[in-house]
Length: 259
Image (tube, rainbow, N blue to C red; front, top):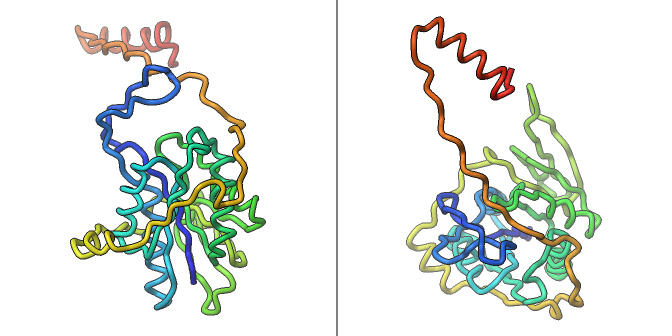
């Protein structure tokens, strides 16, 4: 079974993000880049499916500039068999739909039986690409999955997602798109052997022309990024407990408008 896992390189969660000079993108100088955490759950689940079935191929794919190869190498170090890097200026300002079209073209070339995404990237929190890819390919899509099981013949998949008070279980034919949720598994750490072996694994570079895609402008563009306004300092209410409680209630009602 061939499984494709799209991944996205995003700023580390500990990074102090700053708005860039043009106010349309973040300042990238000094940023530490990582695989989006939800995508790590997707890579791990693909590896577990391959190990459980005793055969198959896990292929990771990503769009972006040259630095994206670091994320792809990390996925190879985890255990993916090979990677695909779509690196073309035509996708420099790609929105979710343009990204989905590029990924759908890769899927058409690779013909996987399953695609596993992270439920959303932690930089823009869109969560739109998995469903858009599924729609373009005509595949079913199952979001926010917490567990999955593929039948022995590799024809159908059962997947469950957590809902209030229980687990909602779906069954769909393969090929299918899954979107992984936190709790699906615990991603493994790359071993030294895996890191060394990743250097020898293939990362295939593709351009828009290789995918049969003509350059097209995105339908969604960023107008401006704005930093959050500074938070006002807290207020300490002193005095006797009764008086302090009365003043707190007044402030919450009349100033904060919270009650």
